[in-house]
Amino acid sequence: MRRFRKDPGVRARTRRVAGAAGLLAALAAAAGCGDPLPQVQGDLAFVGVNVIPMTEPGVPLVVENRTVVVTGRRIASMHPADDVEVADGTAVVDAEGMYLMPGLAEMHGHLPGPRTVQSDAGNLLFLYVANGVTTVRGMQGERSQLGLRARIARGQSLGPRLFVGSPSMTGGRVTTPAQGGQLVREHNERGYDLVKMHEGLAPDVFDAVAATANEVGLSFGGHVPDAVGLRHALASGQVSIDHLDNYVEALVPDGQLPAAGGGLFGVGDLLDRVDMTLLPPLVDATRAAGAWVVPTMVLWETVFFGDRSAAELRAARPEVRYMPPETVEQWERVVDERAAAADPETNRRVAALRRRILQALHEGGVPIVLGTDSPQIFSVPGFSVHHEMALWVEVGMTPYEVLEAGTRRVAEHFDALNDFGTIEIGRRADLLLLTANPVDDVANVARRAGVMVHGNWWSEERIQERLAGIAQFYGN
Image 1 (cartoon, rainbow, N blue to C red):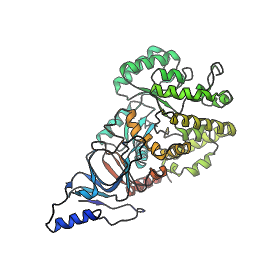
Image 2 (cartoon, one colour):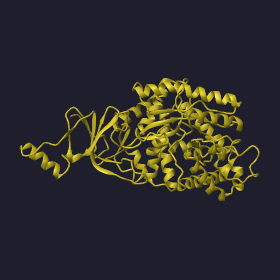
Image 3 (tube, rainbow, N blue to C red):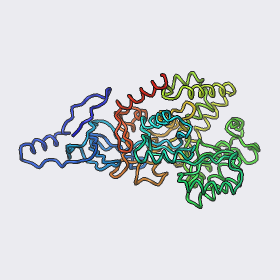
Image 4 (tube, rainbow, N blue to C red):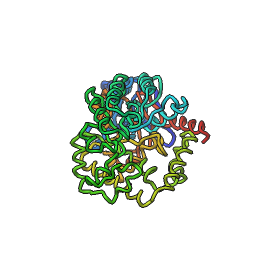
């Protein structure tokens, strides 16, 4: 059998048969006084690993000292490491004392388009993989991404599994109910996975889009148009509310909301009109509607309601060295321009209110899934999920609840629990191997030993080599 050595920085351990019982069995077999251990065979085996299966809602189960075998793109078997031997011809990752969890998801990402330089597109997709993000729901779609989805699925391109949203349904682009309904039918026929909702839709156009999407069985989610409002979007069957869009506006009593709505940059003007007694019924309405929330908290606190300059953000986010320099320069200009026009105290109040809303949604049982709106301003693909997860813990979630939001809950959202999101026999081999337990501290998700995507193993050593090459490519 082939064996992968541990990467630098991971304390070397002598690989044993795994325990006294296993040693005695091996000695007995060698002496001819006992049957040899059963052999497991596949493409690759993680040996001695502690498995975090994510199968039990709310239960931070860790199954210790397992041999997990992958064949093709699926988990083929999982046994106590003491009870089996790995057959010759199967590659081995010596994972004693490490932790294996399902790959993470980015539920509000932006995928490369036809104008993206091919090298930049490949680099962007790798940044997801490098951070253990093995599933991405693209939320700014166009037709070339359908081909990208197919190439990744066939193994012709390296990247996370993609769910592709349609081109955005914006008020500037979709102006009549008939046009909205027709576009939904076209998006469904072309194979998009959902309809991306955006700002500016008139209520009658929104209703036509929603009705047609429900008719053809295509989910719709994203933004909530101000003229429509959160409660109407929930009642219409919008499957996801991204960025906590329109939750602040929904906390303003009837008759006190400006005719133009709050809007992103006007939400600070609504703070003194907010009635927090409206929050519990709003949480109840979200849960009853079966809607999912993708809050993208860090981006909003970084760009729209933050208090750090571009220079401070650049120092705090060294991962920007993996992005094209012209992109980072544009991010810096946007941050500094918005900071110059903002009131810091208002920004802090808005950020605090958004955290209270997220906390209430979580405590009220609303399903929340991990998303960061990457790549956006200082939201670098893959790296951004670590910032988002840390903030959720600050809000009051446990590390395990955060991990659920990036793994099993995502599979539940897509009604695909039999396919991914957990570590079970037959599930996709999209896996993240860590050197420390993420159930103890969500920051341990960044302590990688390697990533498996579509059954392909990337050791941390290989990942770092590729990342160094990307940084060099961009002159960093």
